[in-house]
Image (cartoon, rainbow, N blue to C red; front, top):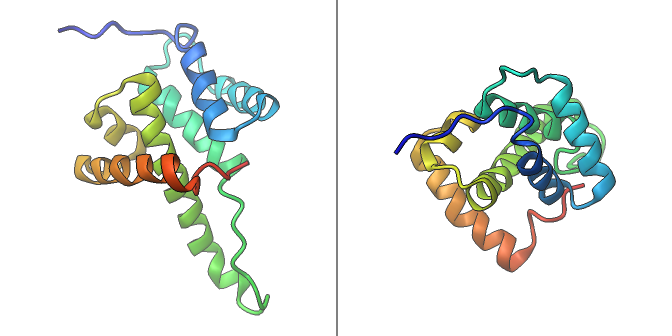
Length: 140
C-alpha cells in the first residue's frame, strides 16, 4: 500500500493535536505549532515536520525538572537534566505519534533517532504511564 505524501498544511490538524496533547493547554499548543511552522516550507516532509515539533517542544517546555537541590553541582547536572527532558518528551511523543498520527514503529524510530526496539519499549511503558500514573502528563 502506497502512503500518500502530505504537505505541512495537510498535517496542521495532526500537528496541533500532538502539540495539545504534549502541552495540555490551547495557548501553549498554539505557540508550539507556530514555532514549528516557522521552520517549515511547502516541501517539508512529514517526518521532518514532526522532528521540528519535537525539537521545539523540548526547547520550550522540556519536562520542567529541577534536580539541583543543594545548588552546589548544578552545572554538572545540566547535561543529565537535558537528557532526562529529551527522554521523557520522546516517550510521550512516541505514544502520541502512534495513537494520534497512526505512524508505524519504524517511522517513529526515524523521527526520534532511536532503534525500533527502543521505540517499542517506549510505547509499552509510555502507554502505561499515560494511562495509569499520569507521570508524563505533567509537562507544561
